[in-house]
Image 1: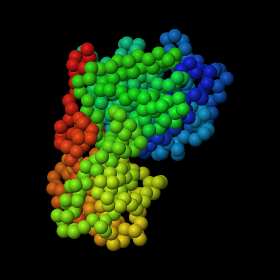
Image 2 (image 1 turned 90 degrees about the vertical axis):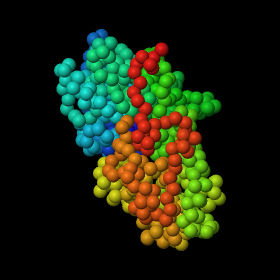
Image 3 (image 1 turned 120 degrees about the vertical axis):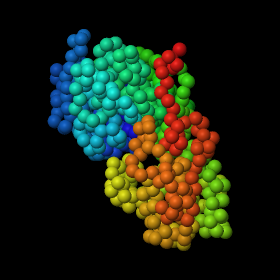
Image 4 (image 1 turned 180 degrees about the vertical axis):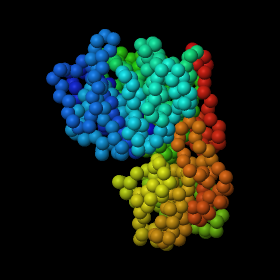
Length: 501
């Protein structure tokens, strides 16, 4: 899971600072998707000889294409958060009328390694990716037979060079990406759950995997096109006065879809035949921001419906555990992804909603930390409860999921033994997670949902009762999705002949 963004301004060669600030803003809105590192690569065609190259850690590369156009690539990267890497000085030093960027959460390729930060550039091609390419080692082996060499252990380097291989054969960004996705008689297809942005010398190309496990969308405006893993931040760039319906300005790419957009405003679309559609349900459950809209379903509304539908089961479990009434109860979310689940339950049950577990806004998301000790320490840095309000109360605690159980156990401990809660009834919007994701949602560590009963997990985290959402509830709200981490049933790759008319 990463956040990827792209911006292309139409007919803007005269403005050397067209896209850099927009890319930084979009990455900031996608920060929830990755905190390991961030990088932006911009491109400017036929730069003036009077351009000054500053020394603010921006790397510049000049290349020429077969038409003898000069193309300047500007790159800035760093470990950590977007606002720690980019400032006004280096933002202004990223020259270009188009560019792409990414915030990274390391799945393949070690975390905290500068060479693994994406986007990656190989000669005139730049690529970034959200998701995982399962067979990137096979792709590497193929490319080695074509005299490509590799410097990293990241799948992004493999697909950057695969795209380059097909681009020099076709001289077309959209055809190159299609060949990457589908494979050819000679080269392997990319297998996995992914979305991809690629920068050629005259266009941005975007595409998603044949099952649309990972999403990517765009907003085509009068003078530019904006791509992003989530649409929550794109509202900043849309003129709401002239747009009665903001969502109409946003298009989610469908399974296997490809779009290529050129500097002169031309748009080429290659829409796959929609046989399969299996987005990752975790995008709504946890990954995406509450304000994001995916396939016309707003994330916060989906979570609220799940909380509402869980009300009957939660009350049943509490009463069966010997509690006679909910009069002493309060509903508390584990911030921030638990908020809307809790609100839905509170509205349905009438139990007061009190957000009395506070969040340290400077702490990282513990799920996407890259080692166990960091996650444990992060739980205490991230959360602190209200001592007075919680004391003596029966707390119905809502979280999006229980993955390893570490965060859940620490939070139950905070409520019962630090803040004096009378009891803690834990509710997970997501059913027990039983499998590591085949399509690239990087679930590290032991998964208690795999080999422990609900009663055993309840004991593990120290709760008085434990209630899980169910796949049936999620299907009721979302329809068909990928639930492979829950039931080990993953959508299979669809071959080209089935997808295209």
